[in-house]
Image 1 (spheres, rainbow, N blue to C red):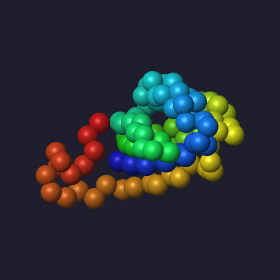
Image 2: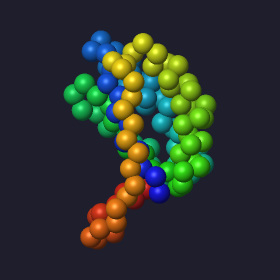
Image 3: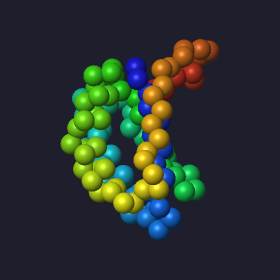
Length: 103
């Protein structure tokens, strides 16, 4: 199952606005077919999504879907550069309950 870590760095004066845009999007993404996990996290100066999709087709549909289009339209000019997307393949190891994402 594909896993994505997407990091977005808002402009310093746009942190609250970016957070609001991202939070508003989440319920819509949670309804997308194949969404197993779409979880937003925050660290100083950045937002990080951890995503898990049922398969590559679900991940691709998400990337081309209306929720993402709305998000990037709303984020226009608010980020300090493009999002950093890391596409991961799980490596099973150890206790399955502790060694892999569970959606």
